Amino acid sequence: MLGGAAGALASLSPRPAAAVLKLNITEGNVQPVPIAIPDFVGIGLHEPATGRNVSEIIASNLRRSGLFAPIDQAAYIEKVSTIDTLPRFADWRQINAQALVTGRITQTEGRLKAEFRLWDVFAGQQLRGEQYNTTADNWRRIAHIISDAIYERITGDKGYFDTRIVFVDESGPKERRIKRLALMDQDGANVRYLTRGDDLVLTPRFSSSADTITYMSYREGDPKVYLMNIETGQREIVSNFPGMTFSPRFSPDGQRVIFSLQRGGSSNLFVMDLRSKATTRLTDTQVIDTAPSYSPDGTQISFESDRGGKQQIYVMAATGGPAQRISFGDGAYSTPVWSPRGDYIAFTSEARLTSARDAVSRHLARPHLGAVA
Image 1 (cartoon, rainbow, N blue to C red):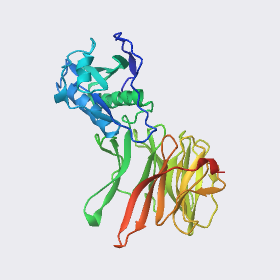
Image 2 (cartoon, rainbow, N blue to C red; image 1 turned 90 degrees about the vertical axis):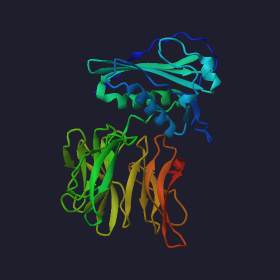
Image 3 (tube, one colour; image 1 turned 135 degrees about the vertical axis):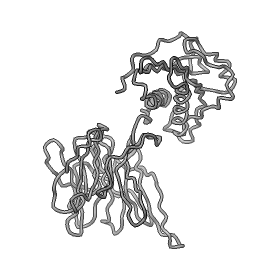
Image 4 (cartoon, rainbow, N blue to C red; image 1 turned 180 degrees about the vertical axis):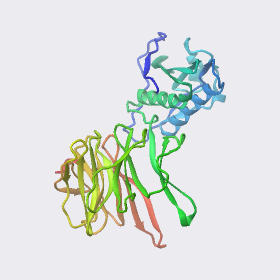
């Protein structure tokens, strides 16, 4: 298991400066920050390329965020061989680097110690320094954790690189396709299968604790909502309701699961408290309400419904009540998901083209939260 930060690295007392590098990502047209990430210095490594691999993963993570522009190492003037002295900031300013990351990986008896420093090049100031201890095979995760620390220090938002993605993997010949639950790092590495493909599985979602997922399975005939511990593989049915249950999703605190339950030709939204197993009905309609998603603070729910004649996105209080429609226009709107800050809802829209092909695209909409009852 990866240990937490063993402590912040001591500052090397660079010259004081008034300006400190900070990126405001709430404004439009953000210019990516030019950042230099030399290979981490390696000491006693069984795999000499580990230092370079760590720096490359950090650079790839930050580049994919769209907020950073890692500078090609061929442009570097200073060759970093230690992190215990001040960088030659003039050399880094000359290649227009605004931020600089220096680091060191030390291996001792199968353990790794990773250290890094984040520098504001123009201010000549250390912004952050940390060290971590872990097992030698955990070097990829160290790179993700360092990426998170850099992202958070410069943007002010929590990083997302040390996260995993749960998804449905479909494979096999066309006439015998199988669907398996699978897990991978956010950059596509370390793919691991959670089910064997014996049963049809759909819509996996993480709990806030990140060791439990909820998903839908046809394991016992009709679709049911299951919980699974991804470390032990243990799973259980959320509840054995009459009818079919769909689209499960955890509340932000991980204590509840919201889902859609179909009875007859309609489906409604229900929420279950996982501690007491008490179930509350949130909608009571003769239409199809499904795909619920909690807002980050847990006070509101977005969902899709055909109550207006076709699939549209609605928002209502997490306890139920009047719902406000927030999507308009031609076609169908589905699968709403809140952004981490709660200022946007992502959804899928489907419209019929003149060529009779369906166009499916992902959109972002601002929910009119103040108007929700």
